[in-house]
Picture 1 (cartoon, rainbow, N blue to C red):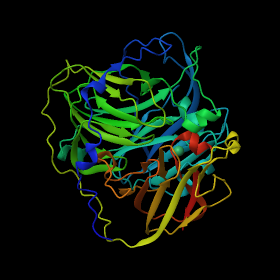
Picture 2: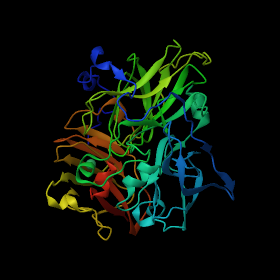
Picture 3: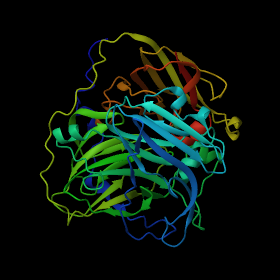
Length: 486
Ligand SMILES: [Cu+2]
């Protein structure tokens, strides 16, 4: 294979995204049925584990709770070590992490470490589900690069509902010495912030609205209310005027098309699985469910600023732009703005031997089978079956997968146990937020996306990993397959 040009970003790919200023009118959630006062930014608790016998140990309890998300009432939620959502878990490359998980829910639950390269038995997919009251321990040596990751429910047929209710959080692999050497903001809650963006729909009673009805299954669950780290309409007062935002689409199905209210430029420094070779300056970013991107934003003008989701992108058409969150930097400590400089060297896979090229055809059949839990949503004509291994990979090799979307909707495709490179999308270079190491990629309708990845070092002929659409309702409805690596 020839050395590809995907590391050298061509601005051509962005031309189609030019944004007229007039498109930027946004509304302060005024169309919603509940009232939302402006709230302080919700910084999730930071959990760095405890060192026990050379391992970094995390104790995680899945539990039910009541949360004050709305101004006027409470909502039944689930969370990890808290009522709703979860702490940010921080660790380092090279650590051995030990996740001691207890399921105190009244339902089965699996907890998946999204983006991690790890043995299949530790992956937290549907085969590692915990019955109510049971514990599960996952342990692995951290091989991944420093970046922003995701942990969330992966329970067979119930991932969507459990994530919606709160079974999701962010993991961060950090390298302080590298961040210092590169002058990257890295102090949690001071200049480095998790920004987990999720949409929710509420009943009049204040409870979450979640539905398995055909339309919701087809579109995936969307809500008219946007939360950041569980808080609606929140305002961050950052510690400094140059901040690193770990943007993280934690939504079930909503695609975001994000800009700042003044369309200011910012630098993207990292994607799903690591830093980019060089920051790329953009003023708009699109994130599919489960995608992450680290950006650095200059707030030294101290002007009020809002992060806005533009209408019109994704699988549902909203009538207006939506407020994501606000920034108030009037009291922020003035620091030098970020300077563009080389960051890291990404692995060069241009000459690797490809052990196998596999087609992955994503399809939706809108007939009566959609009424059933598993049916209508397929990959290569097969709906997810816990008893069927769809693909067998060889460990320590490279594969190219050709993701082809034969439906009318966008599907974010995720492969477990790897970080891949997007070679091209219908032969065209990926966008800036699709450069670098990735574990999830949007496949547009009638698009073919080619991804290249190492199959990893772990071998197990019994326990599979998953690949699936990360619209969680599509995953639950069968758009998922299983592979072993031996
Ligand atoms: Cu899908």
